[in-house]
Length: 200
Image (cartoon, rainbow, N blue to C red; front, side):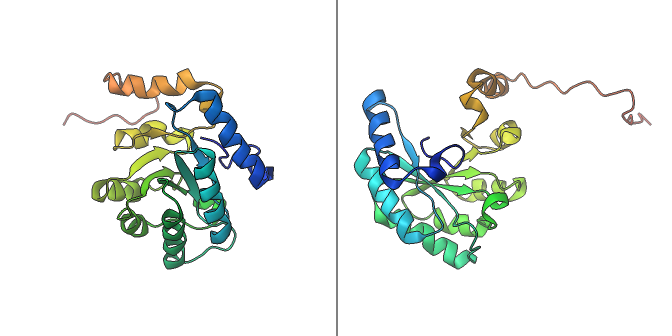
């Protein structure tokens, strides 16, 4: 993931974002998929960045909800559809209402999943029930965007995670999912102060 919302991406120019995709593509070759963050609060600018990322060699784009303006759901849906129609790249929608001020509601995600290039969600919604609703009714790949939710979302059908912390401690984050896959999921022992169930 390049030019995500954490780090220097808010302060890099459009040209620098494209140069970053090009440089990473040259460094890793064609076998490693590159997803580039292109989301802004301006649909036209986001479209331009998506096309630029495609030309620079990206394999997909991460598109956050337009922030600050807090668009209603129909405008949010139109925004994502216009970006999806603008290039041949698949989209990962970024649902982080705590930062943008706007939730991508489950029903909106279900409708957007009908678009052939809207394929995944980076989820920071803190809404497990809503996430499970979308997972049950679409083929969208879900990725936990909050490190504290990596295991919980994976356990209900998410594909994995997109993590800032994993850039520093990747093995530790991966170990969580490896343990789950291996069935290593013991519950911690109850504390002495925890209420105990009666056998009667």
